[in-house]
Amino acid sequence: MRIHLLPFFFAAVLAQAAPDLEAPYAGLKTLSCDVERVSKVPQGELRILSRVFHQAPGRLLVENFAPGRRKILSDGTTLHFHDASFKKGFRQEVAKLDMWWTAQIANLPCTPFEHTQRLRNIEPRLLKEEGGARLFGYAASNAWVEVRVGAKDLIQSFDLYSGPDHAFQFGRVEYSRYEEIAGVPVITAMTSWKQVEEVRVEESITFRNIRVNEPLADRLFDAKAHFQGVEFVDEYRKSMELPAE
Image 1 (tube, rainbow, N blue to C red):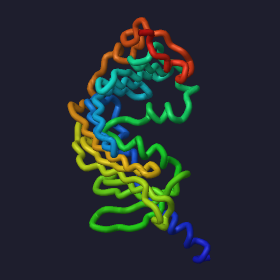
Image 2 (image 1 turned 60 degrees about the vertical axis):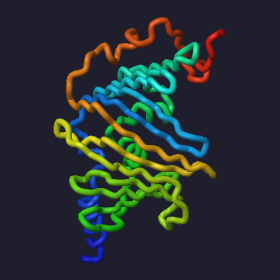
Image 3 (image 1 turned 180 degrees about the vertical axis):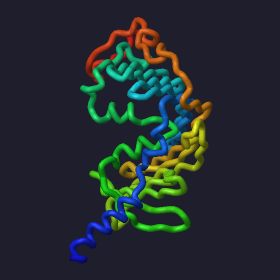
Image 4 (image 1 turned 45 degrees about the vertical axis):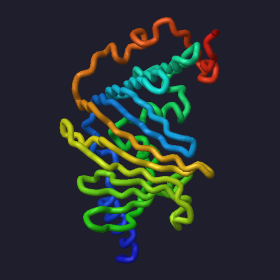
């Protein structure tokens, strides 16, 4: 009888040890911040400046100011996108969007959602406990992901490998700074690198002017206030038409 109960015992221990990676952000209802993303590739450096507004559930406004100007707006039902260098914009119901676009909406600054969304519903393995930190392994669909979790179940880093044997590492994300704002432990700085074939891309992202759970005006998520005069199409590729010179 004890032999039959043993697997259930270890499963219970594992369940207690495995944290909910998104739980620290359960109280996040609104967020606004400035984002500076610096990407380094062999050809040079690219600096992107953005402003983001989020209101749960599903309302998001991203304004890119440099190097080009574009907007992504989700009012919770419909997504609007317009790049100022193109003649038309892209509009589609959120329920009809493909995984790439839904991932953009879920990628909330100052949180680890860009990476944790890929690990949802995957049972982790506890690999190591050391110095108050725990290391978990996730068998994702296209990678073996190791997540280091520190105090208060806050993520310290992600390491991406081809498999649990660590034969090839093709990426790493490290959250270098946290700050608690309105009771939410938001990320204020992060670094990462990824290997794309023969090219290594390094990024550093800094979040500034962070506001958490402060009221946001409804007009921020009103398409009429942002896209006056823009003609929209229902396929992204159709929007990539350059204006007549």
